[in-house]
Amino acid sequence: MLVRFRRCEGDEDLARFTLYFIRNRNDFSNDFTVHDTLLHVLEEVRDSHIIMIEDDRHHMIGWGHYCYVDENNEKRPDGEIAFVYSVILQEAYRSSRIFWQGFRHMANQIAAENTHVRHFRFHARQDNQYLNRMYSKFARIIGSREGVHGTENVYSTEISELYRYLNRS
Image (cartoon, rainbow, N blue to C red):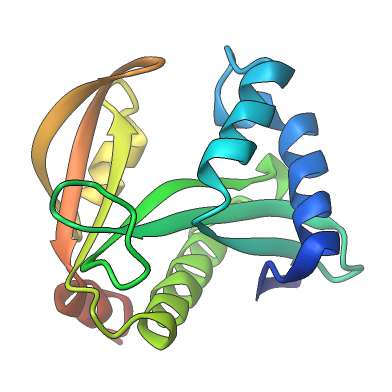
């Protein structure tokens, strides 16, 4: 399966992302309503970056969504923290190879966009053993928080460490 990662650019791409997000909102969270989804897009996407994931026929099969923040979690275009909101991929395309290709693409896109980034952060629900096991290979838990859908671990890694991990042989 050929998978392509590309930056969301322009209104047409944003509309494709929004429609895909609405249709696949349960992959993001079982409790996400259409209302929740639209609010999320209106509030969070404005200052964010989206990676569109497409199949070989250019059909959207997933997304990556992140922004830059400072130490106080305030959005800043030149923030030193790349915070990942979500990465969703249709189940039929999920594999370790595609996960690492996408992760590497996101890290490279971040490096090209913002030379100020020093840390990479994201959350994972505590009850998801698979993700927590995978994420602990390259990041450490720096705290926890009550998310909308349960307790989440807050992961962080220095961006230089992440690049080393992703580019190792």
